[in-house]
Length: 571
Image (cartoon, rainbow, N blue to C red; front, side):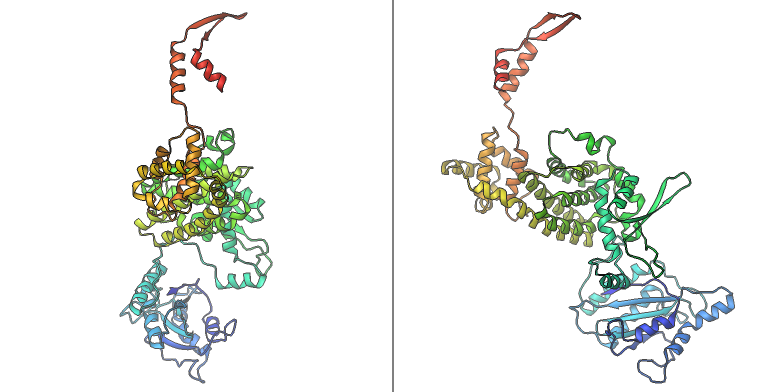
C-alpha cells in the first residue's frame, strides 16, 4: 500500500472538484466519502443531490478563515492531500475497511492524533476500487497548525502495519534515500509529448552518465551541457560553484520558460556537494591521462580493482564508498561496451543506482581505485578484447552479489533488492560476453589424456566443487584454458586454487564459466621463469665490474654471466 503525500495546496474547492469529477481519463466512478473527522455535519455531495462541493469546501476551510480573521496572518498553504493506493494484486477492500485505513493514516500523519477533539478537519473520498484520497485543511479547531514534520515517514510505517493487519502485499520500509517519483502531471506530460521517460528520470540517467567522465564539479557541469542538458548554476561572489539545477530541453511551463530540477530533488545523492565529494576523492595522479602508458588495459585494470572489493567492506563507511564507486564503474562499462551488450549493462546500471546510496555516509577516498578504473574506461578510445570484456562483466556480477549481501546484512531492503535486479541483468550480459570465447575454446579441446590430468587438478584444488565443475557444460572450455595457461608456464593446480579463493563458487550458477574468466584474466601473461630470474640476480651480484675509458671520464660496466647472456639471446 502506498500513501503519497502531495505538496500543500491553496484551494480546497479545486481539489474537491477533481475528487468528485470524472477524472482525467473517466476513471472516477461513484465518488463518495468513506471516512471523515468527528465533527463532520455536512452531507456527502456524492450521496446527496442537495449537497454542493462549494458548501463542503467552506465547511472544511472554517478553521482557516477563523485563524486568518483572528490572527491577521493569512494561511494559504493549508490543503493537505494524500492518495492511498492498494497493490493491483490486493483483495477488494470495503468502504468500511478503507475508512479504517484512512483513520490510521491521518492519525499517523498528525492530522488527527488519537483522542484529539480539536484536530484538523478531513475527509476520505473513494472513487475507485483500489484507492482513496484524503483531503485535510491544516489548521486545527483551536487555530494552531498541526505538527507534520516527518509525516511521510510515519505514514509509511503505518502503511506497513496496515499491510500486515489486512493481509495485503507487503512493501519494504523506506529509508529516505530513494529518488523522487515523478508526479502524475510529469507522467501525463511525458505521455502527451511522446517521451519514454518523465523529465526527472531522464535527467537522472544523464547526470549519472556524466559522473565517470569528470574529475571536478566544473567538468561535470560542462559535460552535462555538452550532452544536451539545460543547466542552471548558482555561484558565490567569488565565482565558486555553489549549486546546480538541470532541465530537459523542451520541458517548459505554461509561460514557455524552461523547467529546472535541483540535483538533490532528482535524487538524494545527486546534489552538488555529494557529487563534488565523489569526483574529488581520487588522487590527482590517478587521472586517466596519468596512467595512459600503463601496460594493462583499462578493462583489465577495472577487473583488478574489483578483485579487492571484498577487502573494502569491513568498515561501513568504506563499504558504502566502494558500492557507490561500483555503480560508477558499471555506468562507464555500459557506455563503452560493445553494442550487443549495452542493453543489459544499461539496465543493470539503472537498477543498481538504488543500491548505490543508503543512510550510511561514505568515505569516498577509500574507493579511489574503483573510481579511477571507471574514469579510465570512460576516457578510453579502444574497446576491450573478448576475454577482457568477459572477465570484467563476470567480475561485475560477483561485485553486485557482494554488494547485495552487504546490504542484506545491514537490513537495507530496497538496496538489496536493487542489487539482485542488477545481478540478473549482469548475468545475462556475462553469458552473452562469454559466448564467443566459449565457442572458440570448445572447438580446440586438449587431448583426452591431458583432460584426465586436468580433471585431477580440479579435484585436488577445489574438492568441494569439483563435481559441479566437471559436469558443467563449460568444462571442456575450462580444460582448454588450463592447458593454454600451462603452456605459458603456469601450474593449473595453483591457478585453480587462486581463482577459487578470489570468488566463492557456492552461489555460482556455472562454476566452470566463473573459473574460465578468472583464469584467463590472472593467467594472461607468461609465468616468470624463476630459475632464470635467480641466475640473473646471482650473476648481477657476482659479476665483475670493469671500467671503460670514455672521453668524459670513467663509468662502471657490469660483465654478464654466460647464463644471462643466453637468456638475453632468447629474449
